[in-house]
Image (cartoon, rainbow, N blue to C red; front, side):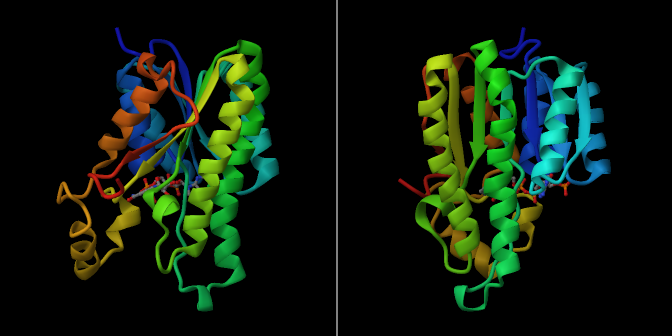
Amino acid sequence: MGQMNDQIAVVTGAGRGIGKAIALRFAEEGANVVCLSRTESNAESAAEAVRAKGRRAWAFSVDISDTLETQEAAKAILKETGRVDILVNNAGVTRDDLLMRMSEEAWDTVLDTNLKGAFSMCKAFTRTFMKQRQGRIINISSVIGLMGNAGQTNYAASKAGLIGLTKSIARELAVRNVTCNAIAPGFIETDMTAELNEDQKEGILNQIPLKKLGNPDDIAHAAIYLAGPGGRYLTGQVLTVDGGMVM
Ligand code: NAP
């Protein structure tokens, strides 16, 4: 028996990296998973991998920065699944640049995806969670949202914004037995961090007491904790999973 038997989880950005690891680990815990990603083939292959673990899966290709598209997708998801127990807002992007050079487009893309996308998803499933009197929302923030980073004003603002969103939703929905928490990963080995050069990696490792980057499963295990029985009495929290980088 898994910790999430027959629960239905929606995971955004499930096509790759951290989101895919969450989808697969949730499936191992017995969850059926809606794999939402921007690229259709990524969503499909994540769903296929969930099915290979003996669970049900649905693939949705959605650009979560597009509010209408996200609302339509949420309706279609509910039509297919009938209920949603867990929502993981994981999809995210970076468009790094120094403030002086940062374009409005880079700002908007990052805020619209990382923050507005999560807001749209939360809003779309709130009525369902409230009716069910049960739900777990997990927003994937970042240590950058806690500490800031030169060259990432847009990303840091989006990830700090997610923390404010998380705490406010936690307060609004607690009365309906819906929890909302954030995970703030440190540096995790995915496509997003593959762009770092050796010098940058060394600089980062120097700031991590555990002296290694994390892997997507490290975040998936934290998500299982928050979504499973262990997370029953936790809401409005930021769980930092970063090898000790921020303490
Ligand atoms: P990744 O490997 O780059 O994957 C990002 C995922 O988000 C992909 O599945 C992508 O979809 C999806 N996505 C991006 N824009 C989207 C949009 N507009 N609509 C729908 N889906 C979209 O990233 P990752 O490293 O796994 O990161 C996952 C989350 O963790 C992000 O929110 C990131 O900010 C956060 N995080 C990562 C790290 C790290 O070190 N890696 C650290 C802290 C926080 P497609 O694959 O279909 O394009």
